[in-house]
Length: 481
View 1 (cartoon, rainbow, N blue to C red):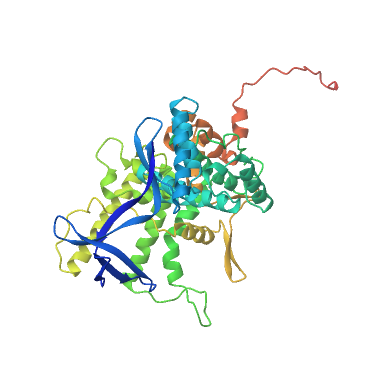
View 2: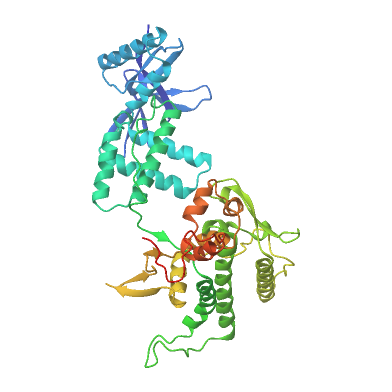
């Protein structure tokens, strides 16, 4: 037979508390920050410390659960009669479990279903952090799930169902949200529901039949690959733009013209910055690395000693969390080696100026290339400087136009598309290109990361066998229709 009671607690004597005698018992009396008066019984523990003792405002229930184990759970009730009603419900569910009417998992799901959804969401994001997910993923996923639930009034886990979610998706579609973005929200919500099912918070995922939006018919942005000429112009623009912009006059009659004076040391720094940006783009194009993956590469992850130089990409920094050795071509390896030598020379010169020990080599934790957080904006400006895109000001804001005649666009991730397209263009087998792109599905390599516009389809048709004419027409005769 279970029971209900208020749980006892003890804590140190509050600062500024006054100990008085009430009803022949020592009692502490103090005021909270809001001015309200509080009292509690005073006791001395076995160590001789003066403490106060009290009981919780709400009752807890103690009973035997479905497995016969004594369990103590809070009832949330300040009234004893209400607390005993909660105890009776708990004991009834335990009896149903022991009788085999419901399973323990169903009982757990029923208990979790009454808890606020925010508690489950907080536990899920903590699970993602513990698992090693990136901060971008668990913050974005949690924010997306919270938005759907808040806007559809889903307050508890038991309220989660397909109908309100599909209604929210339909409303967002009418408001102009793309299919890809809606699928991103759907993916976050499905991941949350699957986790709840795995942890027995719900009996099964209630969103199993939630439809997926058709991204092919509602694609807002399609990336394209850069041609050989555009790549050369981009690298040249990235190398020259820092110095060119710094030497451009910003005011006066010659505003916009070259002629600003630049000191020797500042000029060298700008030229070095331009070379590094061009080398960043070249490395992205010739390795297929993503921007964040390249930003994680340090000097200690570069190996030039073997027959094939490579960059070591740690699992924690790769998108699919597997890790990889990225082979690099000989010419790119030579440029990266020269860049590391230049960085070492700069570090040695700075050490001499500060009269510090001169390093013999770069520390292994030194970033190979400084990939700025603003590289996306920098890339757009380099495209405009190269004549591949243009930037206009509208309503005081800069707008970048970088789409082709088919509405396809170029961004920093398009360099990875360029890598995949040029592999296919060079006749590299699909399985090899898939391994170079580090894709799990070859269709992703062939269909998404290959730009058919740069493929020589006409030349491929010329390689088909020459067949004998079906109609051997005589000179002057008409071909039948």
